[in-house]
Amino acid sequence: MEMDTVARMVAERPVVIFSRSTCCICHSIKALICSFGANPTVYELDQIPSGLQIERTLLQLGGGQQSTPAVFIGQEFVGGDKQIISLQVKNQLGPLLKSAGAIWI
Image (cartoon, rainbow, N blue to C red; front, side, top):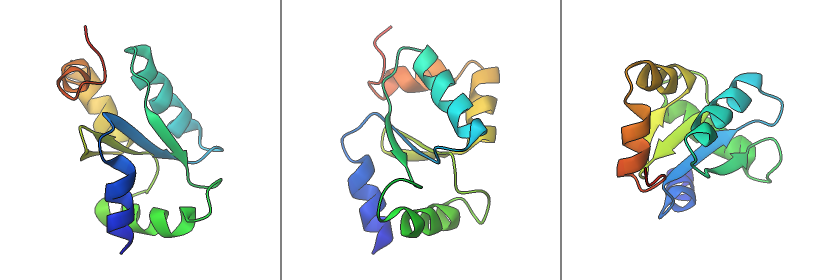
């Protein structure tokens, strides 16, 4: 059931970040994505009513690794901070954001 909730939350949005308001790594990932000119939809799991259940679902999706940040680009689960930083280092994050319609240039 919660996977359906997550799917609805990311539907038709180019970039979605599930975060925690107190997580400095989450803040850094949001800042990195915004630095491309993207305007991600951000859900702070510690500030929404169903946050704990969603966090459990994200933990399963991530294979038991940390649940936040959890980044979806083009409605696809990309991963957490390590995956986003890896994409950035390989110069693949910008093109991925562009192909998802999150940025135009």
